[in-house]
Image 1 (cartoon, rainbow, N blue to C red):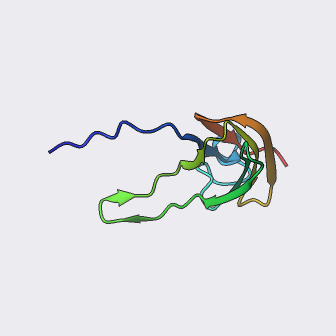
Image 2: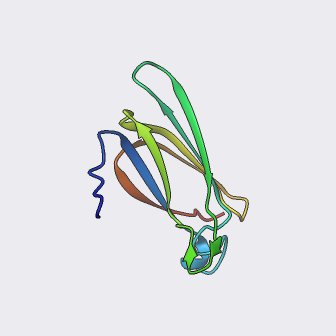
Image 3: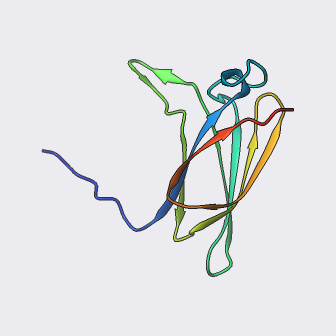
Amino acid sequence: FVWTNPGGDNRWVTLRLKGRMAIDGTGSNADGIGARVFVATTSAAGESTMQVAEVLGSSSFLSMSSLDLTFGLGEVEIVDSIIVFWPSGVRQVLRDLHADQVITVEEPER
């Protein structure tokens, strides 16, 4: 049996972190492992939501966790803010991002 998931109407955003090690050899590791990310949204009804996730490099037998972080947004079309706390201690804020996209976030210079 093959089950095909056609998806749904809900929105999402996926973040792919790129640490400074991959750019110029400074800062956080190339994959952003250990970074903590907060995503803030506000629904059309005015309800605020904050989600948090951490990039993990964990694995088990013949598998590994995804390095991309995906956040479900429901009906929200615009993400109010994304705050990234990089392992190097740098704090980065992104604002007013559209849903339904994969965003590559590069660690800023100190």
